Length: 106
Image (cartoon, rainbow, N blue to C red; front, side, top):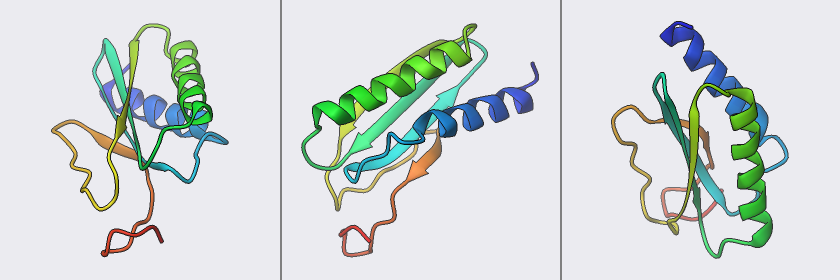
């Protein structure tokens, strides 16, 4: 699979896996990948609920089944508004909640 094909498979697969799993507390989902590893980071605002944790676990499981040749990791982070979400090199947003400049949710 070419890099471009892998990018499409990862992003479309992850966006599909997120359907029905996005709560009002989810600020962003970020991912990065290479030929061996898919790293997913879910960033939540406020207290993480059991339902949120289960939903993200389902996303991880779906991606493991969708990409059996890659090691899939999920990290859940707590980062309250108005803290900025900063991408590291190689990371892309898969989901980003709209937030006002004042730091409140739109």
